[in-house]
Image (cartoon, rainbow, N blue to C red):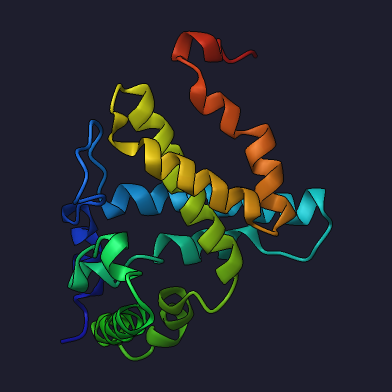
Length: 193
């Protein structure tokens, strides 16, 4: 039935992430998608303004907002299962594509062309994937800082993946913004006028 799209999108808050791990700070896909959108926007601005490469940061942010929308219908499959072998990975990609098509069908026909690329991440896929990984890394830092050692291995693995990322925007973000996530509010200081 069309016209249910945004009611489905609002249900992102009920899909918990990191389901196989003990979380000191629970995170749902709505919260995660917001952070990924913030980071994707930043990466787009860095690409455009620092590295002088054509980029639309707003399009990056919009794509990131919807990057996990399929999980409204599929749930968040744990990473060790999702990437266990190529057959499972490919099957899950197909499930995600079907879920995206079902979500698109809940929009009026005249709106579907505008949302189709957002649900499929056709544009700025590299930035959205990098932002997703940076968000996961930040989550690991936050869990460690909250005294939860459950995320130590994930933090190490995620950092290694980020260090191998070829995008200069990722290196820039890591160098300039990640260190602040190690600080307390008092250490961050006050915002100057």
